[in-house]
Image (cartoon, rainbow, N blue to C red; front, side, top):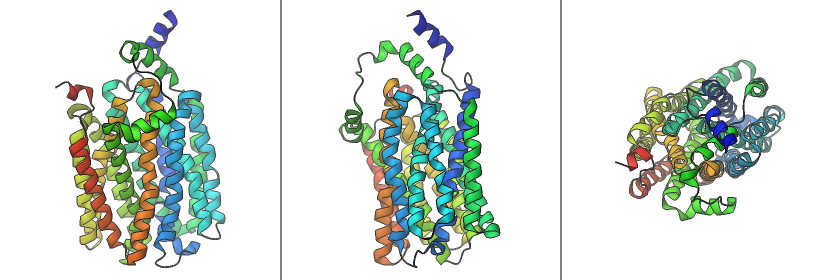
Length: 422
């Protein structure tokens, strides 16, 4: 009992109290975002260099499908695994899995090697990004979870935008293969080196469980399969949040896979395409510094529903607008919509999760959310393939996003403890 009490006082929760470790986790997610961001512009826009025929939209989307299947499944595995072996070990495994990515892209004779590279990217992103956000939630106090997730996602998606822009310029100077090889290996090496100073946050989880035991003692630890079924299908609040995660990743798949092709067909070069997709990611990232904290104050539901509405509006504007400036504005609207919904979906899940089950519950949500890449790749790839155009895929995405927002508006009950008690 004395040891439990000592642990509780040593590993106190709060971003300010744990600023050093919280900052190190933030730096880690910066490198995680750079890793996925390096593909956001260069690979789709230059896919013909890797043997993808003009109009082969479904084959093009296959690299997002492989990424989504692997990342979704391993998000679930990573959550439960980290509850057993610790967050830091899983984070290290994620960075080791990244090493083949730039090598496969550099030596790729055809698009199948890019698909293989994205299998490793799925492993990398599932293990690394899941661990950084889970660890930052572990370190934060209960009333700071939205802020913690907002900071994590903000830095990650700012990095996605920066990497998309930077690799676009590097590709023009050095060629796409050399640009991604040098950029990718540098990111991996620095991220692994920085792990030296990182502490595992399971100590904070155990202290939180001890401190809150009187409130959670009646909640039994469940097996991963039971957790998956409850979060995915049985609990209506979790279910609504999971489908929202799928829908927003379908929209992000559109941006990742088909936006570069759409803008290329409208005469834009790789740098201007990088600006549009980069603005989307950076507005998404920067705005999350405020939207996560906003939801800590006003509740999760209103920001989430508003975010879906703005995202749908931005998609409609992209399909109907013409010209670089108009597309920049629509990208900003989409980015703001993502900023409102994205961190607050996961914050809402974490509101409901008992401390010792947080990893596997968040892992289940992230399974469905990132499987949205695979679902989006299949749906949007087939729509574009059958119609021979990208615009119908944009309209399809807008309809999915609008329907998902309506589902949440009708089905979701407020999850934030302060707002529930009002």
